[in-house]
Image (cartoon, rainbow, N blue to C red; front, side):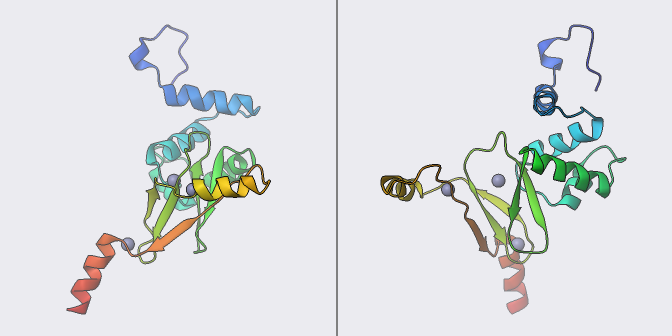
Length: 158
Ligand SMILES: [Zn+2]
Ligand SMILES: [Zn+2]
Ligand SMILES: [Zn+2]
């Protein structure tokens, strides 16, 4: 996509790309096609992705795994992406800047990840702030066996 000199109709402006450019500019980073494409991939998937998932989901086939590694590590250092460690073999990454507070559940068998949108820890955080703590954050990841894997399991058990 070309940054147009011509005036575009509002419907044709890619707001995601404009937003990514602002993010990169604000951190004095060069705007490159692979960087924009990796940000777009993360944004459109709404789920934490591993390096190789990011690579396989990018539409630009010139982006190899080494580029993804380099870019994601850079973004992690700049606070653009957030690294989630489910204590399995792969780290996963998700965008920080449009991240509302949520948790994840990962399937112990197929490793699919779902977002858990409800958080019940507000009360606990209030309690801790009464104890004088500030800047309280928490991270909590869930593990289970997903619906699909449960079905496969049933078949095996029969
Ligand atoms: Zn998430
Ligand atoms: Zn599963
Ligand atoms: Zn929470």
